[in-house]
Length: 117
View: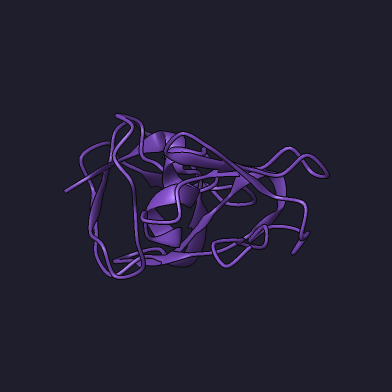
């Protein structure tokens, strides 16, 4: 078979074509080889999305949608605060955005409390 493709997730050779998609019986992964990998990750829910469901990327600007108390201090990040140049991280407790906020400093945010600016 010249058109055989290995599974991009587990690298299994048992993948098979089912119409326009490829399927892996070993890990259950399903993909379209014509779609870029980054777009597939966001569609599969693996990418970071804002409160409105828009995909986020490193360097984006976001706006905080509600007042957020800063843990361990009396500071509050007010709703409507614009945050520039975010970094996506695999943080603890669902905090998946690392950023610097004017007047507060470096901190992590959850993507469910921001919207893309």
